[in-house]
Length: 278
Image (tube, rainbow, N blue to C red; front, side):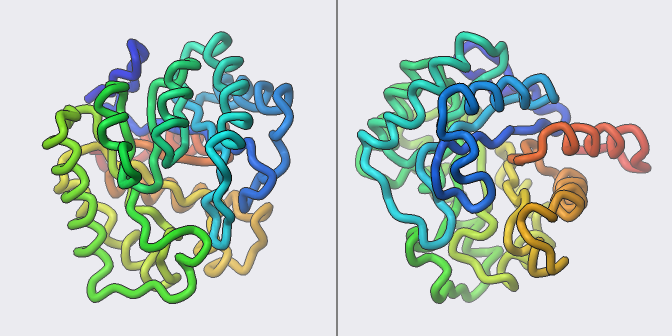
């Protein structure tokens, strides 16, 4: 199983790591660290050296209570970084955005993967993704970042998240986006309580029935803090444990902050596990 990212291929026959590069002042974990071009470029190169298979560049925070930024501001943040990294790295660059205009400019600048926390629900997003002809990750979220954690409710969170993703895959295919260009993400922490997140994670292997690659983004998230009572900067061990469990449940892509450590964890699981990874 491979994803063709503009001629750069992601081999999903084994789990791979997507390195998170937030060029924002307000992301929950690394906000403000990489807002300068030199710092962002150095971090992207570092993650590639550490074993990231793809770098995900985001210019708008999607943490709970985050405020939406304009298209112009998001472009100002991400395009110089994507342009710089695309000329320096052999691996694909992903654009983490919900806006069709940003998708188009990012792909023109050298990105070749779209990571959309809104699952291409913005006006014109599906059509833009079809036009750009690059892989897309469709993520589930309930509500908007500014309000999504106020009162998320589900009758059955696993069934509802799966149905949402199944429907979005169908919408994309009906619009002419190839199924082999689609990835899904259950969206841990996006309009979900701690209990919802636990239930989703415990049923993560059931998402494989959708028959598209599965991405999991749980690195440093609040559910890990709730379990361990550790602050964001102290959640590396918890993030690695969750990453191991995720790949054992069938995750193909792990979206993480701590690339080198996660790459090592995957190597240990692959080498020492009693069961062959699917």
